[in-house]
Length: 517
Image (tube, rainbow, N blue to C red; front, side, top):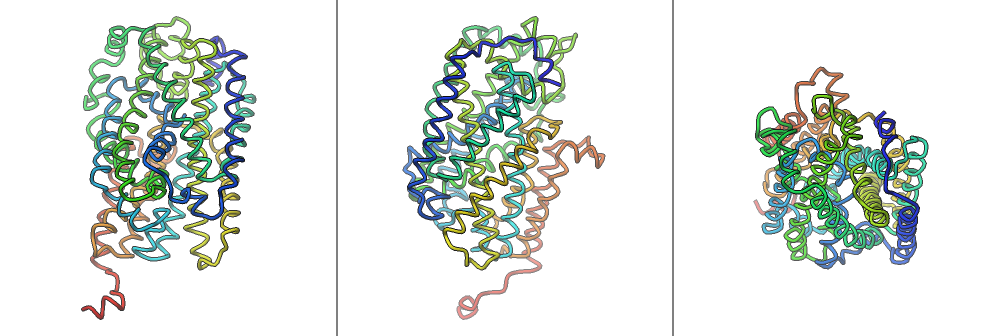
């Protein structure tokens, strides 16, 4: 419905821009084909042979996390929340810096030589915990990226002016096929290379777009318009009645801060792929800047989109009510950024920006596809089979899972009704995994008495996070509870259950420990 409402808006995206996008995307496939020659085993495929140097590790970390979906959900938060949304980026940057300086969670994982978080579960607890945790991680992760294609479709529709849903679906299918091609072939090697290229192009393009936006709109005009639309809530995330509030800020400290850099598997894979523990520290210390700007710059563009669309006669009637209030439609507000870009960027430049963002879309997909497929193979199938699967079979299984996950994403992403901001959907779906995983990592690494029973209880408690999804909340009559309240409650439950379970059902000492006693 939102696409139909935008059918009368003209775009600056022209033929030359289509050529730029086509050349760029074709180049990524060539990279995937080239990278395939360097894949000899699962270590090469999953963590690039653990050979990432600091500069390349930082670039690929930021490049992967600064995907199109990140730009879209961050811009949506800026559009709906104003400057108050900046607290998310500030928290992400500060917490990532602290993790880099202290090595919290990520350095012990790298020193243990694990490739995935569930692999740590087996070393610390049991093989059963690893298999259970791997299944939960893969389920949560796949559901978490379920709307990436939807965000990509919205971006293509808004930027190019294509309003026919059939054509949008075709374009997204083609892009998914390209992602599947070079991820299946090249694994982490192709991911690292494309992330590095995307990081350079996207950094230049987004910075230029911010400068153009301020030049066209004017800084004082931006501030005054946000004040007019959002009032004090547009600047203060703690303001009562605004889009955030104290509990939301606390939820961001945990999710946008700790989880996004030290618990979420796609980020931890970068730490596992680093050359040494020292490189891990440097990776996170320098990446803190990237975690800051990956939220704040897209949020600022969302703020600029709000100002432009509010002051434009054609678009004001679409995104705002007659009284000037923002229309509360999550699908519609996701269209704000691409529509804004299609209006202010000239032909040629819009193609470069579009190619960079579409490449970012593909880059995020390849990282996530590789991550979840590898978890299913490395942490579920292989352990369940007693580690008797050959390297060739593991690679084949990982590639098969990538294809199956891609098919699911195409169906889920184009048909699921969002019902909440994209960022909040991703946090809730991800919480199914990371609320329990945080308890296992924190207590497993830093508390000797953490036990297998406690680990199982913590993992099971994560299932309660699914109640934060809008359709589930509505079905259970929990509409008054926010995703932040549900997420914080589930996190607390996981920690408490793991402590209680560990105290009541401690692990039996090993033979060597018994002799020492």
